[in-house]
Length: 465
Image 1 (tube, one colour):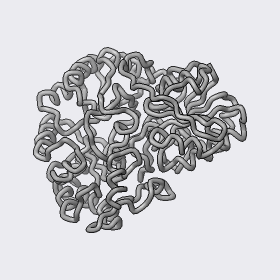
Image 2: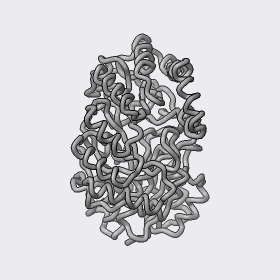
Image 3: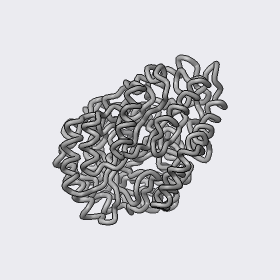
Image 4: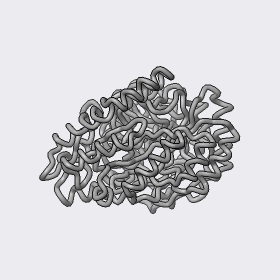
């Protein structure tokens, strides 16, 4: 095996939108998700090392120096960070000319030819699921024989055949060993999760067809492929053994509740381990399943409501009904399951009236905490194609974030300007949090747990793009 470095490159201060984060922008408060997409191939490649530069506060000089000791470097990139990540690759190649450099992530997966030709420092880019792709390259297989990549040859881009998705997820080794070897778990922080936490994927892919959602349309696909409940329980047991200080485990699958029987079976095994856990869910889980999950350690669900307007839900192909979402949320409240609800302003069909409707919907259903994000048309998504066709793009795809890495509005409509969409963000937060009912809840919670409540209240952030 080549000595391999897996790198989440330094970027905007506080930015982790390359490796592991669905929200490719800097959050308004410091937040970091685990670089699981890099940790997985790192678990397959012997003698590898994973460096998460943003989480560690490392700069260009730090990673350039580290890259001198390796033969292969794999960098996770994203649309807003791509140009910066290319500069990192060039600095690493200058410092170590023998270093082979590849990039992975949704951005290079949907535009491989132009990506690989962005710089002579890039030897290849890998699309789709790149775990075994990288392992083959690290093992010395010629680039011409590796499926799933586009590589440079004599100044031209050569695209090989596609690599099929991984169907047996149990074949992949656990990322927890890589976390223990290379990461400092206290670096990873999300306001609505208890700290310290550990997150990882128990499956890939999502059955939903949301037009804005990046990962299923570019990397994971729409078939939910999962690890068995027994394997998941073994990984959680390993977390307990390695990191006794961990207070919560988060399953970062796009929609953990896509497979209800498996979710229940997994929960029952977790209940025997006595752990607290949370996951992503769609607002359609029946009461009976919610009760099984709650009875076996579930604390919180991260739920993408997106909007309170039914027509917009149809427009984005969410596959969800507002009345179902109301009933689901009421069930969670009854069972004592907390919800971090995510909403998006500026989706197709948005008007001043629908923004008002969604704000009132959020106030009415009253999730424990919320995050409100701007609709982002990422290349590779149906929303991006729709925006191009209809002339909705205010900015090109490289201008989804500002110079400081924070989200900006990239869409506008004839009846709704991007300034109005951006302004709705602050209005939404203020009207949700600064009302007597929510202030009372937060005050009471602060009396019970000052630290956690402050973190919950200040969380402004993670859009499930």
